Amino acid sequence: MKSIPSLGHHNYSSDQNLLKRLAFAQYCRPQIDLLKQIVRLLGITKGQAEKKLIDVGCGNGQNLVQIRANGFSGELFGVDIAEGILKIAQKSNRAKKTRIHFSVGDALALEFPDNVF
Image (cartoon, rainbow, N blue to C red):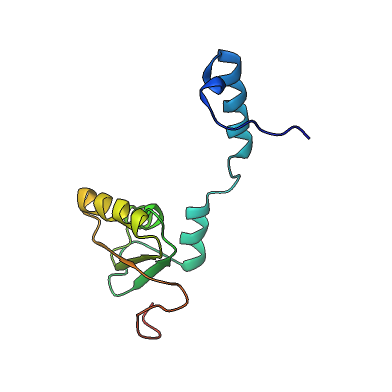
């Protein structure tokens, strides 16, 4: 099995290299729509204003943004241990006005009451 060279400017030096990288990226693309499966499995539908949903390990919050865009009107919370990525999520949240609550937290010690989500 060939090893994949590290990313560097030499990977962009020719059209052939770019085409190889594109083919590799397309080959590695997930075959399922993960967000669609999350929405289906959780029974998320439009409305549901009384519901609360939490994404633990939310990263940049894009899954929550997409859930909101799919019509979920309940409260959304995103928690991640990495403060830096949450700053990106919070900035995006303010810009898009998605009304998502983001906070820094450890998945093993969440500061929410039981049975809220």
